[in-house]
Length: 95
Ligand code: SF4
Ligand code: SF4
View 1 (tube, protein in one colour):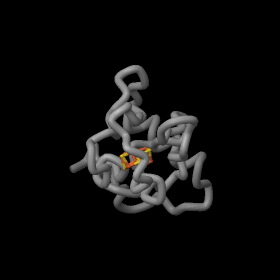
View 2 (cartoon, helix red, strand yellow):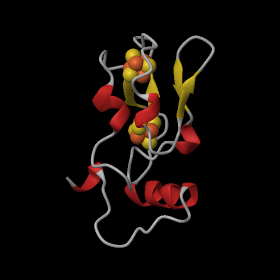
View 3 (cartoon, helix red, strand yellow):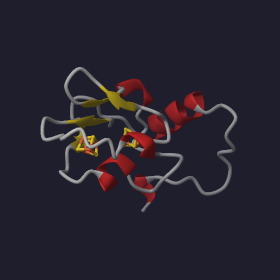
View 4 (tube, protein in one colour):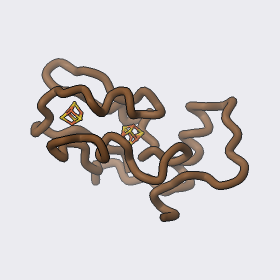
């Protein structure tokens, strides 16, 4: 399930550099998450980093885009083809 940014966002910018997939950028009015680049941080962290740093809880799951861990791993592999995915794979599904 991709994350999305809701209207509570105050444009502080804290989430943007935390995303391992560069999925976050400033949109027309608020920061936005590029759906196709969000892996829920699977492959990099055991918790979604945007949600972890957001001071106003504006990074939330998007129920309209539910994805399994397997789909998110494939997404991460496509986004980072040079990364070694052997061994422990960080994922909030495995906490
Ligand atoms: S959940 Fe992770 S991959 Fe998705 S937008 Fe937030 S920081 Fe980026
Ligand atoms: S950390 Fe939260 S408030 Fe700050 S830009 Fe990101 S979504 Fe908006």
